[in-house]
Amino acid sequence: MLWQEVKTLKETGAPGKVTLVVYGPWSGKEEEYFRAVINEYMKEHPDIEIKYVVMRAEDLATVMPAQFAAGISSADVIITPWAWWIVEMAKKGYVEEVTGLINEDEYVSGIVDKVKWDGKLWGVPFTMWLKPGFWYRKSFFQQHGLQEPKTWDEFMSLLDKLKNIEGVKNPIVTGDSVGWPISDIVEHFIITFGGTDLQLKLIKGEVKFNDPQVKQIFENYIVPLIKNGYFSEPIEWTTAVSKWWNGEYGLYFMGTWITGMVDDPNDLGFFPLPGCKGVVGGADYAFVPKFAAHKEEALDFLKFLATKGQEIHAAQPAGKIPTWTKVPEDKLWGPMQQVYRKIKELNLAILPDLDDSVGGDWQTLFWDQLKLLWVEPDKLDEVLNTLTENFPSS
Image 1: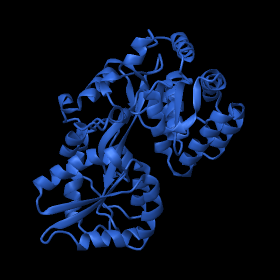
Image 2 (image 1 turned 90 degrees about the horizontal axis):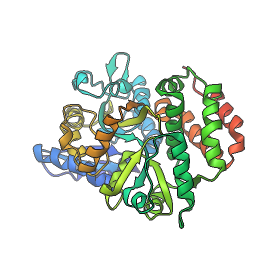
Image 3 (image 1 turned 90 degrees about the vertical axis):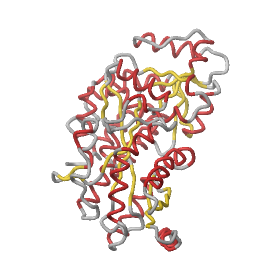
């Protein structure tokens, strides 16, 4: 059905114009921010019309391989946060090689490597998000005389104070959806108490999830917080934003996109766990399918996304920063300039997202097992063994 819809779009494009079909993950406000990028490109290229279709990573992975196998593609450009999936499609011969399309030296370290395979480039990075820690309302903290913690003891003291504030259900709200909000929390604890190397070794499979150093992070920090009611039950993550903003919860661990989801981003503050030396960051990536109808125009739009398009997107209230280092800091949306500056002041390394990097069926398993842990923390051993036994072999 989708292919027929897109075919119709192409057939009804304005006379004399090339219509590019672009699939991307953003809807609602996020789509609005991305459309600013599209509109600028169409302004500079009046002979191009872009039809944007919302298609999330999970849907792409279901729909597109069958099209590619048949030698067709209903999209000219596809954008997804799953770099591993782009590489997987490239290995099957479904992706147009883009080596040389961009200057790889002009990007955040390591960000381009995720879409390289066999020494060649198969996609380009767009803007990135960061998951820097626990968000709070400055006005809420001021009203209740609360401070950002500098030590683990101060963090626990903060949670106890939040617990005793009238109207607060739990100190920390747990976001839920397909599972990534909980895995984001867990990764932050792994990086804080295991170090940045442990995050990287877990991604590579060099350390197992049932390794004692991983288990002790769960046993000493995460599980006690769950058992003692510091975390809420998982709540659909966008609903959780509203509840937290209205004072039902004190803290929310979330990515920088939250800055574009609240009424007053200038009332936002955040802090990483005391002692944390790194934050997870991830980008969206764009690629051109081998069977795209308008390959030349698609590659030009791809280059725009990887360069000037990032500057336009980062200026929107999307909570993103550019991966292209040529964008000046003062071009970022105001609230994100403050976030970006604080991360630099704290000297936090930007690390790859664990489950996004491993990908495949294991990613879903990771999310599901952590959701199980959140409601049944006594099943820690079972969870860690399941994650270990099912980790993909290299």
